[in-house]
Amino acid sequence: YLFSVGIKVLSVDDDCGARAIFRYHLESCGYQVAEACNRIEVLEYLQKQTCTLVMTDYDMPGCNGFELVSIIKNSWSQLPVLLISSHLSEEQEQWAEGLGVDAVLCKSIEPSELLRIIDKAIQKPGFRQAS
Figure 1 (cartoon, rainbow, N blue to C red):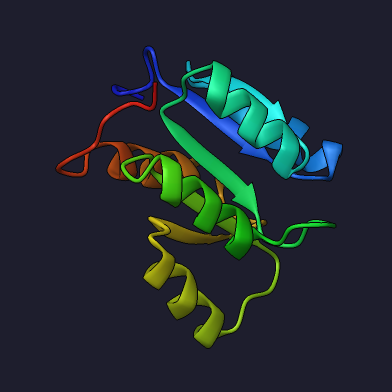
Figure 2 (cartoon, rainbow, N blue to C red):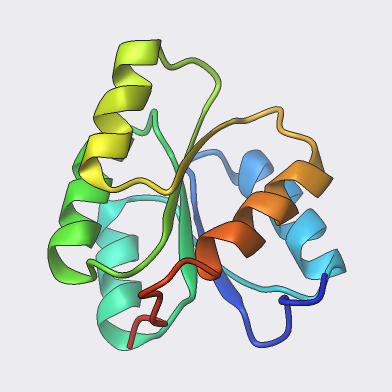
């Protein structure tokens, strides 16, 4: 992927198997990948490190994806966020878009489609890497 050089994705999921699958696909295309399994790890990471995009699961214990997106967008408003779920209603997808989610994805997304969506999210006008 043309835009993968220097791009760091923060992959957030309480399921280590899901994180491993996304890591494999992203790293095989040249993306750097950091991982977090809950809200606390995400916030600690974002306060100390930089990333280009956050990709978070919706259904996690202690903090669902909507809550996490709200927290991220409150402090890092320009940071692209992808929300991943195996089941979201149309109403929930609209709610996610209202929170500033760049895309809502199904967990079973094809790797090529995921990479296309990441490239699109980081090419949006006004995009700045979090620092």
